[in-house]
Amino acid sequence: MTDRKDELAANLAKVERRIADACAAAGRLREDVTLIVVTKTYPASDVRILAELGVRHVAENRDQDAAPKAAACTDLPLTWHFVGQLQTNKVRSVAGYADFVQSVDRSKLVTALSKEAVRAGRELGCLLQVALDAGESERGERGGVAPGGIEELADLVAGARGLRLDGLMTVAPLTGEYAGREQAAFERLMDLSTDLRRSHPAATMVSAGMSADLEHAVAAGATHVRVGSAVLGVRPRLG
Image (cartoon, rainbow, N blue to C red; front, side, top):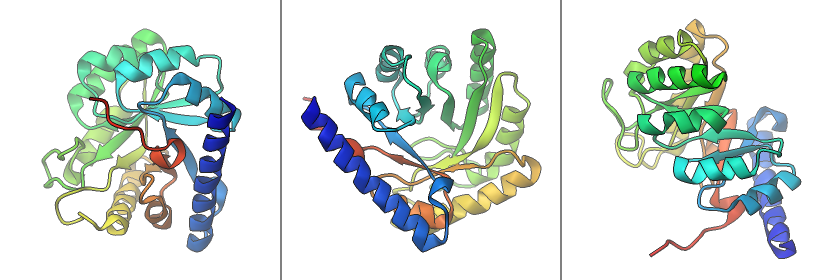
């Protein structure tokens, strides 16, 4: 376990340096960017080590992995983010442990999240996942609402019991006009965030950037970056 802690500490230090350097290059304060460590496929023991190392935000993208892991870590001072595509039949479970759902992308999901948040007596922070590979009124290849659908969905979240509209999230698209243009994609997300905050001033979170492109996200103005493999390593695929 000591070896694993040393490994995670070294990786975390490298990522922290990357974020700090990116902030300095962009003229931003380091404290303006929150690191979320994506712990998908890794065990609760790694989450515990990360917590010991000072990590306070962790993310998961599959409820079947996240639910037992969150249950095993309830004693830790962690904020849990759900970042994967979310089916409505998993909402009750996710609403029980997630502090933020970053993948809100359709009205049916808003209705389900509201119902389960109220049932659980919790308030869930919601980020709208924006699909920059979609047309104005379509859905993205990996989920997400098209830019043209943000306003309507945002109003729905803001008016839903048990939910709080906190901002926007995106994944750098693999297709479309922003494919291979991470900086431009994240700058587009910032423009959409500016538009959103005109009608919803408290929706200030902008979640963008992962292990390979976090510098682009910081340069564009992201408030949160989601980093997995750069901290935890690359696991071999099962099967």
